[in-house]
Amino acid sequence: MKLGMVGLGRMGANMTERLLNGGHEVTGFDFNEESRRRVVEKGALEATSLEELVAGLNLPRIIWLMIPAGDPVDQTLQALLERLDPGDVIIDGGNSWYQDTLRRAEELREHGIHYVDAGTSGGIWGLTEGYSLMVGGPDEVISHLRPIFETLAPASDRGWGHVGPTGSGHFVKMIHNGIEYGMMQSLAEGFSLLAGKEDFGLDLHQIAEIWQHGSVVRSWLLDLTEKALRENPTLDGIEPYVADSGEGRWTVFEAIDQDLAAPVLTLSLLQRLQSRDEEGLAHKLLAVMRREFGGHAIRESD
Image 1: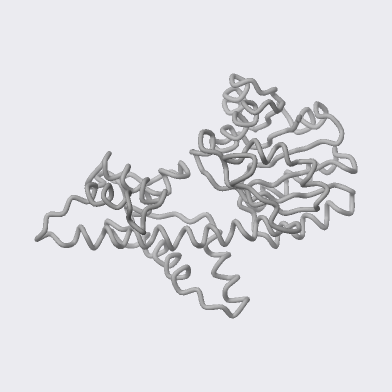
Image 2: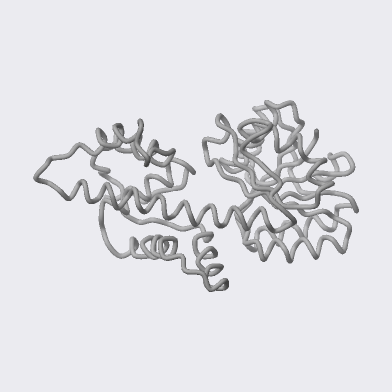
């Protein structure tokens, strides 16, 4: 299958490489020339503009967006709309707010263009491990795109699914990220408590290794925590500043809209905001975990 990839940052480039390894033909576009060069070296075709990207794809065109949520998506869709034909498909694999997805799908539907939302998890590890894909859109369109999702997922029959109509993929991914906040916060607080018991002289890396096997708290996030503590046991040089991508906030807003209490998810978001005003091991660990699973930048202290 032939498709265009718009947005060749670290995750978009890795997804492109996995698609190429699966036998798909990919044309990549990014405003950054170096980003385009990297995927061309992997075997992708290069487009130096959206116009060139669209012109090089077969009908019906399939274009996967891997760009930041918000205005960049709207601007890209507007630019594409002038060049696409009815029956073409746009897949938004970024972390867009599901309400924006519903609005965009309706606008594109008026022009006969299909809009699919593919909530994507896996971070920088997706190239080798596969991506978890939560897909929303019409049945017939998803069926046509199935080979793409099967290639990107950990296996053709697991790690991905058609979860519902357009908007549902980004909604499920939003809740996924809210849960992620809570799990990360609990690990960070627990290790902070362990470090605070100075009388015992606990080895945090050793404890993380113990918990990796047989424990009810074993998880990929724990594995990443163990890796971080192995490489930097005292987390020296890391500023306890924890960014948030927005999905945790949207999850809390959704809980309020539904009159549903979600105290763990809410407090984990507030802790990230608080991290910008104080220092502590827990916040350093949160920052490191984000770097380990998603390649997110950390702030290094002097």
